[in-house]
Image (cartoon, rainbow, N blue to C red; front, side, top):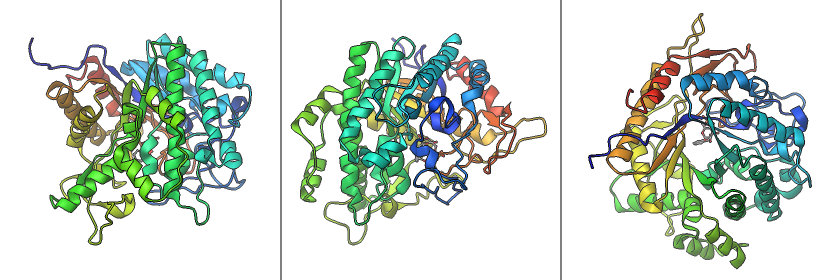
Amino acid sequence: MGKTTTLRPDFLWGGAVAAHQLEGGWQAGGKGVSVADIMTAGANGVPRQITKGVQPDLYYPNHEAIDFYNRYPGDIKLFAEMGFKCFRTSIAWTRIFPNGDEDQPNEAGLKFYDDLFDECLKYDIEPVITLSHFEMPYHLVEEYGGWRSRKVIDFFVKFAEVVFKRYQHKVKYWMTFNEINNQSDYQNDFSIMTNSGLFKHDGENMEQTMYQAAHYELVASAEAVQIGHQINPEFQIGSMIAMVPLYPATSKPADVMKAQRANQARYWFEDIQSNGQYPKWLTAYQHNQGWDMDITLADLDVLKAGTVDYIGFSYYMSRAVSAHDDERVDYHYDEAADSVDNPYVEKSEWDWQIDPEGLRYAMNWLADRYDKPQFIVENGFGAVDQKEADGSVHDQYRIDYLKAHIEQMKLAVCEDGVDLMGYTPWGCIDLVSAGTGQMSKRYGFIYVDKDDEGNGTLERSKKDSFAWYQKVIASNGEDL
Ligand code: P53
């Protein structure tokens, strides 16, 4: 047998989005208010405000987003024209259970996703579905304190069971929680709200609360994996992490130790979802903090029995970390305080470090640690685009970014033997940025005419990257 030189023939090329970032229709068909519906628009370097409920005079960009709710047939037709084999989106939990704690699901919401998936299948586009992508019902935040409460496990599992049953003949590829590990940055109000529906209480130890909330989510995820496999043994159910490899800033041993602990603190979620158990350092860490955690023996059995079939991950950037002069003995990870600039890589306008080789490194790291199939379910370049009078956008910078990452992805597969299922670049059509709420931080192959204040015709047009990606897919990644 010769050397591996190509991606697998059934490689899942496609694109990725999330319901709350493109659908709009925030109250259509009986949809409830989600945590994305209470976030205003921020700007580059200006965080989004997270309000207590929807306030009358504020602008919430996700309420209308790009109106995919009404325009999806045309958008999917464009995806088909690019040659998509799959389309990753999420199911808005609040369309199915508007408050999250109802007995019965909302039929209008279920019907919407039936129609959407049928539209994909019409073009042989495989739906790849995230159950919870930063859009939990806001009612669960108000009434139960979000994932602070063990009760939310049952609400999530019920939601998962309903949609697994309903779409079992239409959807094969699933993921439970989007970027479940973002909340390792527990001092960041955005991360703890999007992942876990948490508002910080006065005097609360957010680190402990985050570990508790994440524990409940991991139990819920493991239960969902088991139920999904009972409903349809053909299901492929994955985890989903934000893969941001953390490099030591120097070869100084304390920096190396810092990077090791930082990676442990950022990726223990995957240790549980892939390996089915808590890593030793974390059990020791929680014990040494003197925290009284609600982690039962029954939970540990569930975690063991509900490991994932594959690892879905996003990759945008790497970061570097360095130890402090008065470093704590436990090398405690504080994302904001420990991150330093990496002089060897460029940055995007939003200060995201551009590091294609980091993708190959990340894939090898994941393969060594977990030995599961991988699926790159997000990657991309957020940039300001200039639309020409004829609707075209010359986005060579985006092509350059994606090309460099695909090259490294192929090296990980062909040189390093990583088992890779597919690649779905983020925001294949322009949508609302999660982190900033902007429209002007664009990722798409398809331009959407809308600005940061909500003005625009919502008209779609093709960027230069559209024809480029079409050619990449047609050649199974050979013609870059
Ligand atoms: P935006 C932080 C770090 C890496 C990925 O992000 C992240 C975030 C959160 O902002 O989010 C993922 O829109 C996420 C998507 C998001 C995308 O990356 O801030 O799964 O929902 O839109 C890009 O530029």
